[in-house]
Each structure stands twice: as C-alpha cells, then as structure tokens.
Length: 196
Length: 196
DNA sequence: TATCTTTGTAAGCAATTACTTACAAGCATG
DNA sequence: CATGCTTGTAAGTAATTGCTTACAAAGATA
Image (tube, rainbow over all chains, first blue to last red):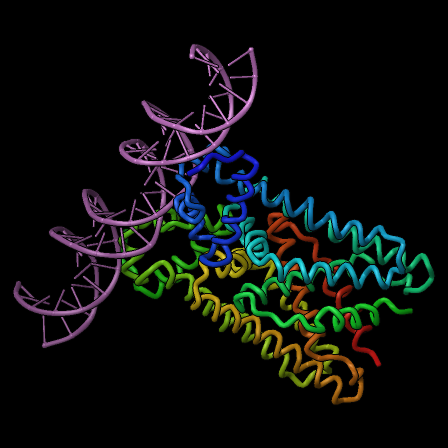
C-alpha cells in the first residue's frame, strides 16, 4: 500500500469503524476486519492508533467537537427560543439518521465493556445536550412566553427521550426510518407542554 | 457439584448472566466466566442451554412474559386513564431500576451483534409498549377527557423516551438514580400535553 | 549522497472464545 | 440388582482476539 500521512490513515480507520459497525455490528469490529476493509495490514492500524480503544475514543471526541458544537451554536443563537428549539431537534434527528454507525457505537459501547473512560465521555455528551436544551427553555421562560412553573429539568429529560428512542428505532429497523414530519410533530407536543 | 434439574440450573444460569452484565459488562459475559460465577463446569452450561445465544433469548422471553405482562394488566384495567398512565409509568421505572442487568442487556445486544432474531424480539417488546400506551391514551380521548386533536402515535413515542433515557442514565451512572418524584414530574408534563 | 524518521507488512504471539468429547456418577424404572 | 436416562466434569478443539516483532522501503533532512 502506498504511504500516507497518519492524519489521513486515522480518518480512513475511523470511517471504516463506523462502516463495519453499521453493516456487521460491533461484534465484528476486530482489528483484522478493520484492516481488511481498508485494504491495509493489521500492523499498520497500530502505527496510527496505539490501541483499538483509542480509535473508539477518537470517534467519540469527533462527536463532541462536531455534533455538540453545532448544537451549541443553535442553542446560543439570537433567534426566538421556539425557533431554536425546533432547529435543535431537527439537527439532532438529521445527525442521527445520517450517522447510523455512530449511533450504534454510542449506544452499545458503554454498556458493553463497562469502561469508565468511555462512560465519562458519553455522560458528557448526554449532559451537554441536556444543558443546552435547558438553556433554550430558560430563555423562553425569561422572555415571558413559556410557563415558568414547569420543571425545566424534567422537560429537558423528556426532550432527550426523543433522539434516544429515535435511536432505538433506527437500530431495530436497520436504519429505515421515515422522519418526514417527525420533528414537526414532536415540536407541537413539546410546545403545548411549555405553553402558559 | 450436586445434581440439579435442568429447570433449576437454567434459572441459575440466567441469573448469573444478569449478574455478570451488571457488574462486569457484557464484554465479560463468557461461558467460562458464567460457569465460574455459578461454581459449575463450563460443559454443564451446555447441558442446559444449546448455545450461549439461547440463554440471552430465554432472558428476553422472560421480560416479555413478566414485565410486558404486568404492563398489559395495567393498560387493560378498569381504572381511570389518568391513573392507568401513571401506574404504567411508575411500574416501568420500578422495573428498570430493579433489573439493571436486563436493562443493559436489552440496550446493547441488538446493536452489538446485529442478530436478526434478537432484533425481532426487542422490536416486539418496544412495539408492545407503544401499543399499550396508545391504548390508554385513546381511552382517555374516548372518554372526552383528553385532547382528540393530538397525534397519539407521537405521544406514545415521546412517552417511550422516558424509560429509554432513564435507561441511559442508569447505565452511565452505574445504577445510581434518584427516582424520588421522577415518575410524578414526568406525569405532570404528559398530562399537560394531553389536556384539552 | 548519507542518515534519520515515518510508514508499511508478514508472521507470530499468548490469551480468550464458544463449544465438544469421553467418561463418571446419580437416579428412576424394570 | 440391572438398565437406561440425566447431570456432572476435565480436557480438549479450532477459531478469533488485540497486539508485537523484525525488517523493508519511502520520504525528509543534512
């Protein structure tokens, strides 16, 4: 195989990981399989990542940077809280349906090998999301539009249930999901809950 | 080891599976580990179950029979829809916090080895739950108490998000969860959504 | 050109996996 | 007691796992 920089190889490896998870399941994510999928030797993989675990952690870091990053931008924008909440949900739905390998990875890794490092990373992603949603809701309450007597934390938790159960649907139905007006319908319900 | 009937051994094995999953993670659920935990030989396990996969499937079958069974009883009772919905949620929360091994098993197995049989079983559990919730909501609408213009399917989906994200919380926080008034708070939100 | 670092690979490592085999002993039935 | 079925186990099996080692070649730097 022709030489390539570590940066390029790392990207190839991470992409192949998601590919394998989605098509064959996490169980078949061996370094042997991984190397074959890319067309490189198994030893090469360990040139670019110290351990297999580090590949997973690097992917989770990408999620933090890219996905949570874009959500943060939405939550902190100057738009109406209602619009922000809508954009936030739709962005999440889009990300999950577009990145099914990641979805399954996040879903199953933590409970699978009970690794504290992994759990901490996922916890952070989960908490970040809850905080951002809470912020939007608090902004809506502060502007006098939404009911100030509701439990913000509970709404955030309920809200988080949307992407998470969408996640399960995606896994169980092999990625086939008709998200047509899914986002819109959910927003209607959430808004009714938030209304004064 | 003294002789025991297959029925007793099967129960012991299944209990040990949940035990291992909860304490050591699914990754450490090997037949070797399993045998050690019970104090029997590895060969003995294969006396009582044809394959390791069959142990998992048998556990999932138990969930179907016991858990879904009790939820069905609640959904079909003669009580007020509001009371039924409350009982249903609280029963779910209780089951999940009491059976953390099962929680993690259901969570990760399907996405882990991409097995169609497993997926079908989990799909059925998930769909059963959605149907039962939908039934309660429809009863409430039929009685004239709840808003008939809402999308029942969407409410059911949103509702399902509650146990599922509770699930994630449980896995990520090693089973520590303060479910004090969790059920009550969620019910308040759901009821506001259903109100005319 | 000579040297050094980086990237590649084939072969092999010990450990672990789910499962089998051969055989012993318990237990009910004749 | 004898026969047959069930339950137990120790010691295997072949396959797979994550990772290492020894060495070759490419590319950068001097």
